[in-house]
Length: 140
Image (tube, rainbow, N blue to C red; front, side, top):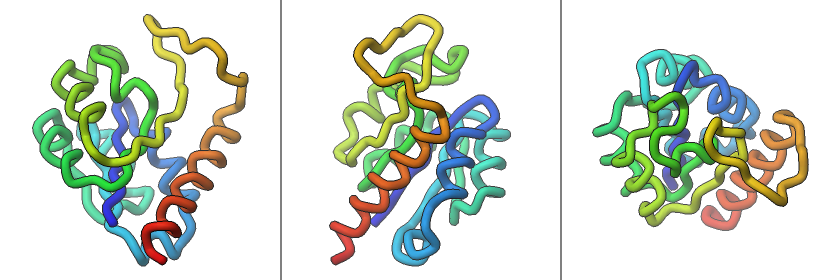
C-alpha cells in the first residue's frame, strides 16, 4: 500500500499528520511526502516519510500510483496555496484512482459551506483515524 502526503508552503499540515500516524502504518506501508516546494518536502522528510519529492512533475507522476492521497482540500483546486497548486497538479490529484483524504483548510477564494467548524487538531485526529481504518482494511 502506498500513501502520499501532498503539501505546500512550509509543509506543516502534512508534517502534523505524518507525526500522528501509528507506528504500524509506517511498518506496513510506503509513505511518501510530495511538496510543491523544497521546504515542504524537507519538513515531511523530517516528520518521518520514507521518501520525498518536490514539484509539479513529481506530484503529477506519483499520484497515479497512490492508494491513499492526503492533504488540504486545496490540492484539488487550481491556484490555491498562493498559486503553488497548478491546474495540472489539481487535475492529476483529483483524477487519481487513489482514495483522497482531504482536510477542509480554508482557501482565500473558496468557501466550503456545511462543514462543522472543527479545530485543526480535531481535523488531524479525524484524518488519522480514517487513514488507519483504510490501511487496516487493505492489509487484512
